[in-house]
Length: 119
Length: 109
Image 1: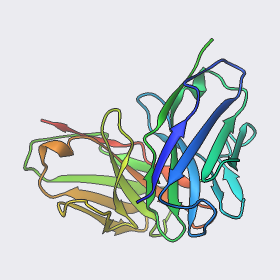
Image 2 (image 1 turned 135 degrees about the vertical axis):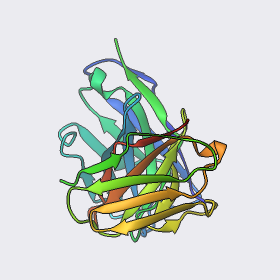
Image 3 (image 1 turned 90 degrees about the vertical axis):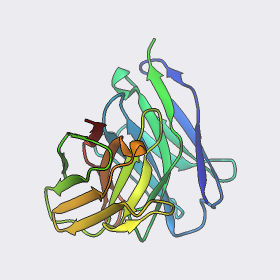
């Protein structure tokens, strides 16, 4: 059973870069068959897909965030990361990391972490 | 761009009643359609994947159906723990772009 855990600062100042890490256990990021993704949820709102990374290193991002987002495999074992630059209050949200299967619509989610953008 | 529209926004029902939630797509979809349950302060929980497959540990009272642009999540007899927010989600073939519906809140009448 894969488990995912987000970590990073809960408070980021406007114009700075939001950086989060997802630690994965029970499955290897480098093996095929799965993609690794970030999703966010604004307070009291719906879900917004941010982007994904595959074992090969290929990525794709939401068009609305593409100019500010980078998803990469972490330097430590079995982690992947999200960087979102030039943040504003509109980026305040719960950020989830998740694992999706390449051959189904099933997605396994981390518990999520609230990031607030405020000075 | 695919848009998923869920209806109704709120469903007021009593325990034991049947709940029928709709997810309508702006264009015909593949079978990569999933449903999630979310409770306050919790991450979404996978209920149904690939239109009609129950995830591990999900009770049989939850079922999914549909094709093309119309998909349905049915809860045959509501239990107290089923009152929550429900989302549908589509995944494009490749790259795996995820699209979410706006959600249906199932509340106690």
